[in-house]
Amino acid sequence: MASLNQQPNGGIIGQNDQLVKGVDMTKIVTSAEAKAHLSELVGQVAYGGDHVIIERRGKPVAALVSVAELERLEQGRATSGRPRGALALLGAWRDVGDEIIDAIVADIYAHRELDKGRPVELEE
Image (tube, rainbow, N blue to C red; front, side, top):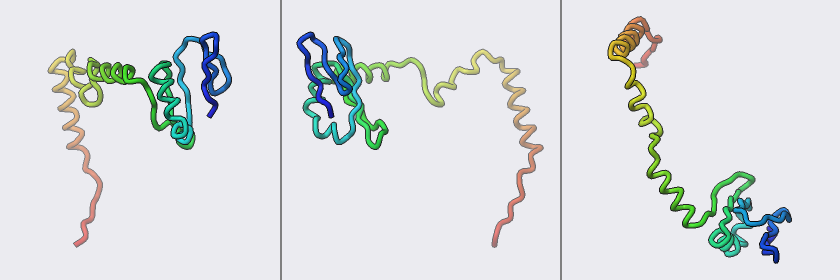
């Protein structure tokens, strides 16, 4: 892993020898690199505001972020006003009149009656 070095002008030279000045960085490292340089990575995240994505066999498996960033992410998840999954369907039909819903349900039952299913043989 190429070490990130603080430069006199306030920037840092990163993994690809690119000078990045005053911006948060997302760095990608392998799990072996993360293990070998964990202390350095923790410092970069905690004090430099960087994010680290840890990959195994070329696929992202974990991320290293500061505690403040984690708290912000968890707060956003807890206070999200947008329901997910089946809860997102609640209220989706609120503007549809009862007559239309009753007609849809009746149509479903009518089609179920027409469906004879498939033949099934049970072994004894």
